[in-house]
Amino acid sequence: MAQDSHIIPLAPPRAYPKSDQGLNLSKSINYYNNHKNQKSGKCFVYFLSTIVILSIIMLIFSMIFFRFKSPSFNLDHINVQNLQFSNSTNSSSLNMNIGGEIIVDNDNFGQINYQDSSMSIFLYDNVTIGIANVNVGQVEARKSKRIGISLQLRTNDQLNYSYGNLSSDINSRMVKLTSFGEFRGKVKAMKIISKHKTSIMNCTMNLNLTSQAIQDLLCS
Image (cartoon, rainbow, N blue to C red):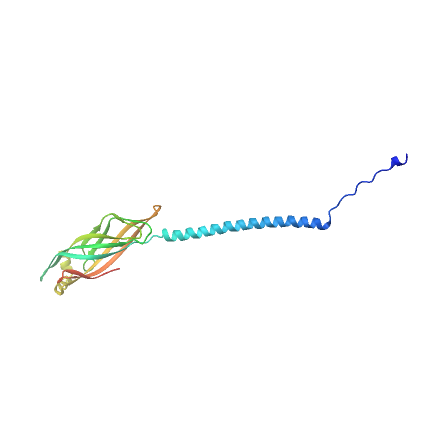
């Protein structure tokens, strides 16, 4: 009995995981990390794609709504009133009143506030015989507007002595006139951005002294 008391009990055996269980655990960890990295990569790609799409939309929006164009304008419906002309050996004269309209086309997505503009009618080598002024106003976006004008055309002695063609044109009952116009305005896009724009108009026309009317009007 005394000998039995000195027996040392054995330690319980340790349980070691099998090699295939450790491999499965490692695969699970690697799969989780790879899935997390893929998810983060997809989020970055989605974010980058959203930025690119928004940039394209903003670019298209700016090209459409913030692209400023110069307005186009032309002469139309020119009426001749109180026409008087004379032709003699030493002097020729031409006097009349003209009423008409300027058609302004605004192709912008914002209104145009036009400033004081002028239209001059010339006769023979840019000698001015009449000027029409256009007052301040505005043209709505994507619309056209008709602006009435009136002016008096009058030749002077300098024209008579410098150019003999006036006499021959009066004899032929057809006088060629040229018109130059400048239209100045400010385009406002969505009440945010504004830009000054200027348009130039050149017209040619013939004054028929017999019918007392303007014909062959051509503007560019």
